Image (tube, rainbow, N blue to C red):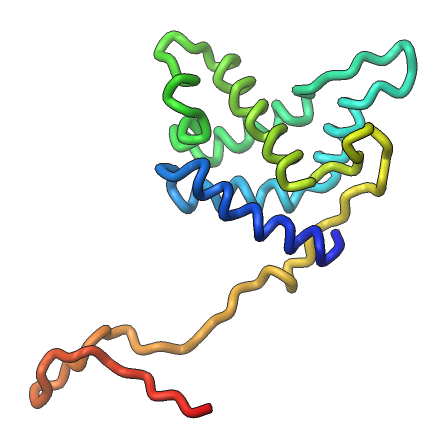
Length: 165
């Protein structure tokens, strides 16, 4: 995946947080990192959405995406329901209806994040490639565990970090 696509994904993360304001951060990151870690599955899903021959049927929610949804449900448990709005949740919804509703969301997310090898016209641009983990690894800093001075001779004050440019 090209650097500009990764930048585009990071810009869209803000939209994810606004869209799923009440969703747990761990759920958002699990879904995001899952989606960026499975380019082969997303290639297969997107290809099945494009009718290539007269005998083929285009499917918007493919078995590939439903399989992913089942795996996410196993990983997230009941937190997977936070992917749905309250109006989409019902006590009478069957397991299959919930899986389909979440799969629809994942399909929309893949398009929103441009995790598809096809353009808007259905033309194959290029197969998705894995995201380099080096490009998204976190910045780590060594910091004290305590948030304030804890010796017997000081008042509990904030610890300050002096910096010089």
